[in-house]
Image 1 (cartoon, rainbow, N blue to C red):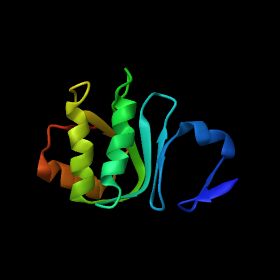
Image 2: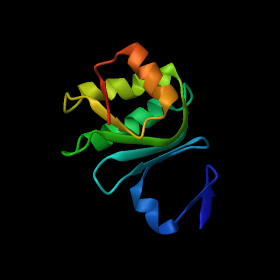
Image 3: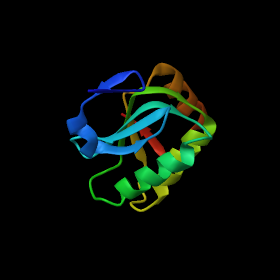
Image 4: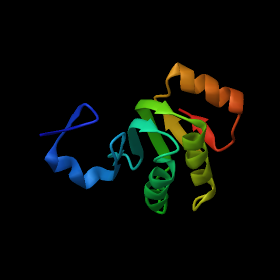
Length: 116
């Protein structure tokens, strides 16, 4: 077992790893979506978006579980929003949205996101 962002991660689950840095882990989930764990900001927003863009090229994706997302700034939200335009041209569904993020998304009213 290894510790990543304070969480225990199994060595067997490395095949689900899409992106990793010192503050963010992005994993694919069994249902075809992705899980964001940690923090997204100006320092890693573009790299996270690149990793997700490769994932979105596959059919059946478009759901992002943000239950373990501790922080996201406007730059990170913008990076996620831009993914809704390509390649599938549909909104990104955010699951397990915390109340503070839900409030921000409601205020921004971006059509790029739906909240599950």
